[in-house]
Amino acid sequence: MRTIDWNDESNTIKLIDQTLLPSEYKVIECKTIESLCESIKSLRIRGAPALGAAGGYGIALAAVLSKTDNMDNLTKDLQSAAETIKATRPTAVNLAWGVERVIKATSDAYDFEGMKNIAIEEAKQIADEDVAINKKIGEHGSKLLEDGDTVLTHCNAGKLACVDWGTALGVIRSAIESGKNIKVVACETRPLNQGSRLTTWELMQDNIPVTLISDSMAGHVIRHEAIDKVIVGADRITEDAVFNKIGTYTHSVLAKEHEIPFYVAAPTSTFDFKGWEGSVKIEQRNADELRYFGNVQIAPENVNVYNPAFDATPMENISAIITENGVFHPPFLLDEVLI
Ligand SMILES: CSC[C@@H](O)[C@@H](O)C(=O)COP(=O)(O)O
Image (cartoon, rainbow, N blue to C red; front, side):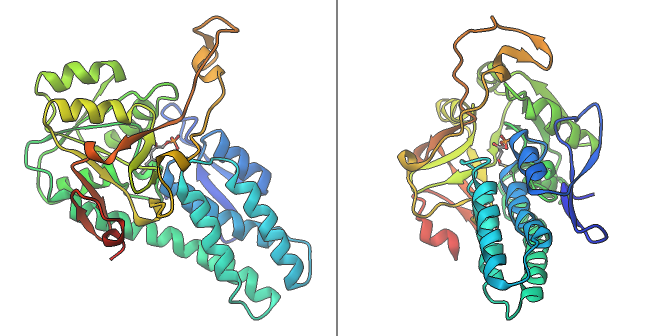
């Protein structure tokens, strides 16, 4: 199934609970805005493009749940749900983008029922487009990979981070589909281990060769010429930087030092055309994510913790950005990316 989808029978959101993977594959249902927000905060649903779909479906759910009977009050209910949903994760720009896109679509409605239907249809449209966009990213990006390449990736920018197919892993899937042999090195991605739990799981499901390393092994592995290219996803791209899972910047420095290409694969919905590095709020997560590993305590109970979820990679460390519109090389002129 898709990572996130709309249940037409119950008018609810269904999603794969990613906190349980790889030991359990479970689809859960979000019937309220509260349960959707909890799912986003706890990373049951995660990854920038999947959050875009979650934002859209969230507004559809708010429309379905609204108890009002007139357009003005429904608009107010949707605005209130929009603020609540957007506040759950501040860095991935796609979440706010998905929310705003559905809100904007509802403003074209002529009547109350029309508003609800438009919200559901627009949210479904976002999800369908996401799959098509990822396939396009894959098509463009696969040309950058050569037969026999070993590609290092960080976090999970695969089908689990999107509605389907994936951005960084979508490029790899498309390259393999075109007949190339590609191997993947997946970095563990501490502290929440999206690389070891999710990237390895979804690649193994598709029989794509993958080797797991800890984040601290990346320098050693790259230095010994075991990596041909690095491909990562993105949560937000401003004029001067790419925001992605914490640890991405370190890989970009290693790639630059060892003269291997460092590619970013992301849909245009990840671009923040008004932002710059200093304007972006980096999500700080709970200290217990570092003090505990699951239920096991691995640091003193009250140790001071710094736990930013994302870092910023400056544009000068990036060899190319792959979007649904093509492959863009430096200097990255954001206007060109939209064409
Ligand atoms: C195609 S997904 C790109 C990014 O969203 C991904 O690399 C990432 O950093 C996800 O972080 P997460 O905290 O798991 O939502």
